Every structure is written in C-alpha cells, then in structure tokens.
Image 1 (cartoon, rainbow, N blue to C red):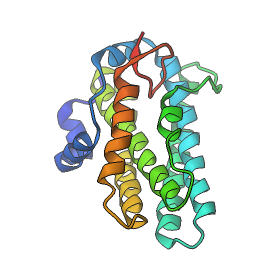
Image 2: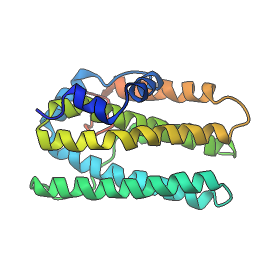
Image 3: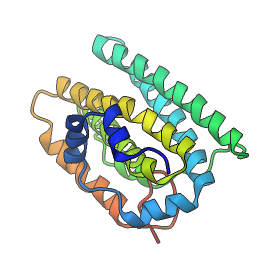
Image 4: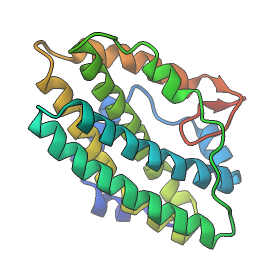
Length: 213
C-alpha cells in the first residue's frame, strides 16, 4: 500500500514537516481521507486542475511584479514545476482510464481569497500568504494519502512532497519581504479561515474540500 512513513521521511525532512504542520491550523480530518480513498477519479481530476491553477498563479505574480527579482525567480521556478506536475498527473489519470475535464472548483480558494486586501502592498502580501496555505495544505494531504493508496499513486504523491514544502516556504518568505511589519497577524487571520474551510462540512468533494457532508 504505497509509501510507508519512513520512505516519506527520506523525501522530506522531519524539520520541514514539523514546520509545515506547525504552520497549518489543523490536520486533515480522517473523514476526508476516507472519502478520498473512495473517489480516486475526482481526486486526480481536481489535482490536475489545481496544478494548472498553481502555475497560473505563479505566472500572474511574475507579470504583476516585474520590478521584484526575487518574486520573478521563485515564481518562474514554481510555475515550471507546477506544469511538470500537471503533465505527470495528467499522464497518470489517462493511464488509469480517466478523461481529463475541469469540474466545478471547491469553495476553498474562494474562501481564502475573498478577504484579501485590495490595496498594495496588502494585496500582494495577502496573496502570497494564501499561496503558502494552499501549498502547505496540498503537501499535508499528499503526505496523509501516500501511505494509504496503491504503490503507483503513493509513489507519485510522495514525489511531490519536497517541492510542495519548498513552495510553501517561498510564498511565506516573499510575503515577509514585502511587508514592513511582521506578517504573523495576517497569517493567523487566514489560518482561521483555512481551518474553517477544512474542518466544516462540505457538500462538494475536492482535493481541498472540507469534511464530507
């Protein structure tokens, strides 16, 4: 049944995982994991779509920050990685007999982005913090699922852990770089929203959805 915990730790250090788990306001509920194991097709289709979204977000940040070299470099690398991930998950779902299509997205991204400030530099800082939560939650869910799925899928999810953990740190670092005060308050603010999205009942099952209703 996929990667064991020890194998996952070979790919992501205990320090990285501890940092990530400390950042997230909660762990994925067991009810979501159980539902994910029943809905492989939806999980992979939505995962494929989210990799496209992640690349789009990174490219969007590059276009809006042409005067910020650190944003350009980190987001360029992130966009390339996310597109490679898209190609890999698309190959996997095709191999398993699924036809790629874009489904109705979950409420998660909307809940996270709705309170993002409109004016700069608050808009950029908040957008980067939201990006950190999305990447961290993705990594946590890959780690939660990898030991519970078949070997091929477990190997794939485990292979994504290292890059997703780095993406989360990159987003947070950039957020602090462009804020003239500590970002702890904004991190906590979005953490409360993220916890509500993850722990409350959700009618729609997706990769970032809450507890199945």
